[in-house]
Amino acid sequence: MAKTTLRDVAERSGFSITTVSQVLNDVPGKRIPDSTRDRVRAAADALAYSPNRLAQGLRLQRSNTLGFISDQIGTSPHAGQTILGAQDAAAEHGYLLMLMNSGNDPELEDREIRALRDRQVDGIVYAAEYHRVLTPPASLKTVPAVLLDARADNGGFSSVVPDEAGGAMTAVKELADHGHRRIGFINNVDDIPAAVMRLEGYKKGLKAARRPYQKALVVSDQSESQGGYRGASTLLDLPAATRPTALFCFNDRMAMGAYQAAAERGLRIPEDLSIVGFDNQELIAASLRPGLTTVALPHYKMGRWAVTTLLRSIDADGKESLRAEALPCPLVRRASVGPPPRS
Image (tube, rainbow, N blue to C red; front, top):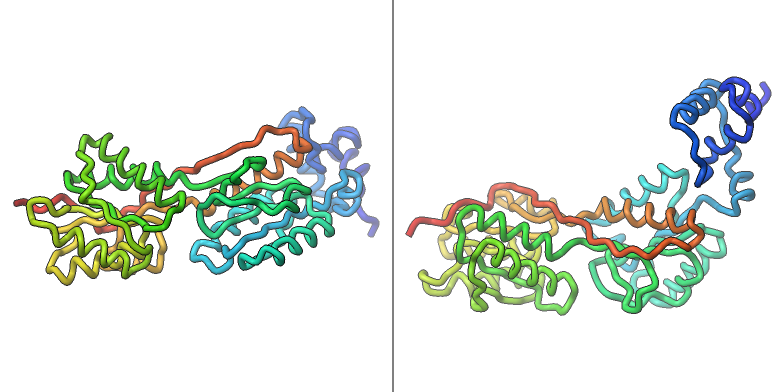
């Protein structure tokens, strides 16, 4: 049986070969009515037409392949969602994604970028394990690229990160809406963007809720369970008149430690103490009893945004303006928040 050609699709749909080619090859910049596109694709489906992707790539000087390089994202709890978002966006545009993990090894990272470039990838998503400011490798400037969960210290790249401050404001609002006035914050001691911005959001959230900012209700420690335990212990051992009735924790691991500190003091959650976390790590937040109300990081959406923005830059031949996006962090309600206890 002869292979279906563009001419066959053109004859069946009633449009010219040029129009059919533009529709089926998703040629950018062509104003073709949706009704025309629908008829052409219906004809192609009916004839089981399969485009020659290799020939298309040669004509457009594209490989329809993108690279995805990360430092440690392959071992992080949310890596799957980030990669899934990137893969879904790539697939929707007819692209494949090549994944590589550098393990924070600059030499390996540089070799990976060169290898992807040698394989004629059309662009690279450069992903960080966590939100940070970094110096992209010089070799990344030789190919269209977008940063994911990172900002470049010298600009030069479009980037997407979580709206850390907005997420913190959401957490504080949830607690304030339940009537809490003394809201403590257990922050990460490390000087990273997430810690700085979540503290900023905590302060803004208090101000928006007309709650006073009290420095004594903010502590910092290692962003692990034991750090959360120590931070919560410090705040919960304050005199009853000044002790917080609610805690906002930098992440879910610290919130888990806060649960332990509360239990040791005979405090029930949420009857005696409300707690909100950050990150929405399912293995922690959904497993704690009661379930932890927390703020989710937009991993899937960041993956989609990075690929979509990269493809837009490729289509514009690098002439599109750079973009810096901060995506919203939604609240995931479970059962760790309630009204403050009556005195």
